[in-house]
Each structure stands twice: as structure tokens, then as C-alpha cells.
Image (cartoon, rainbow, N blue to C red):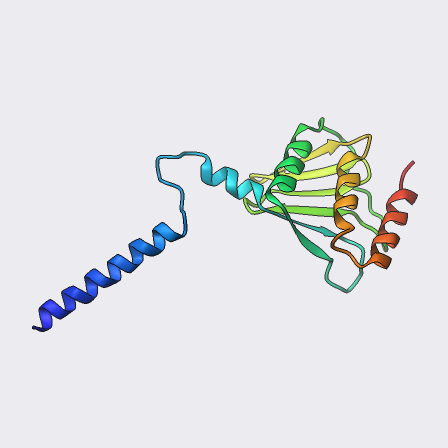
Amino acid sequence: MKRSLRGAWLALGLGLLGAWACATGSAPADAPGAEEKAMASAARASVDVFSGREAPTWALSDDESRALREAVEALPEGTRPLPDVGLGYRGFTVTWADGARATVHGAVVEFVSGGRTQLREDAPRAVEERLLLGSRAHLDPELFKAVASQVQAAQP
């Protein structure tokens, strides 16, 4: 009797585990790249503007995340490093779920992916502008105004 009860609990546990796996919608093992695309699409953005306080951070939608990643990866290689600006606005940072990270200040984008750091040139400052506009819905209006004025003041 004990043996059959133990088997029933084991079967129930395995059944629940299988149901959970189906409910989570995990990608089948024979779909290469699907998980990598999902990991690359999820991202969080932040603006580095405070000293001694945590940076305001917000989630990007999958579409925003994917478009931003494509924009960063399409930028030409650059040679200028991120500026050392001290206090105030120090740029935006986007971190994707796959560990890639882009730090953006002015026309310079530092992109780290797969353990490799690349400097990218964004002369029209399109990535910074996109992040600034996207931050409006996530920042206090006064903070957004301050960040926007510092972004504009940093333009050549």
C-alpha cells in the first residue's frame, strides 16, 4: 500500500511539473535562436543624473527594446570614449536581459556585449534623443525638464 501511494504522489508531482512547464510557454528545444531573441528584446533603461541616489529606471517594451538594440548595433564604430562629466546628467544606460549594455552620452555610445566593449559614434545623437523622449512617461515632470535641458546644453 505504501509503495502504490508513493508512486501516485510521484506521478502527481511529475504531472504538475509537466503542466507547469507547458503553462510557462518555454520554447521547444528545437527552436534555436528563439530564446536568444527573447532575451535580447527585454530591456531596462535608466538615466544617470543623481549622485548618491539610485538612478531612475524603467522597463522598455519589447518593440522599444528591439528597435533600440538594432539602432545601437547599426551605429558606426567610433574612437571617442564617454566623456567624464562629473555631476549632473551623465547619460542613459540600457541593459538587455542577455547582459548587453549600452551607455549613451551625446554622440558617444559604449556598447558592451559578449564581454566585448565597443565604442560607437552617433553624430545626430538619435539614440540619446530616443531615450530622452522615451523617459518622459517615466520621470517626474520636473526631473524630465532638468534632464532635457542638460541633454540640450551638452549639444555642440
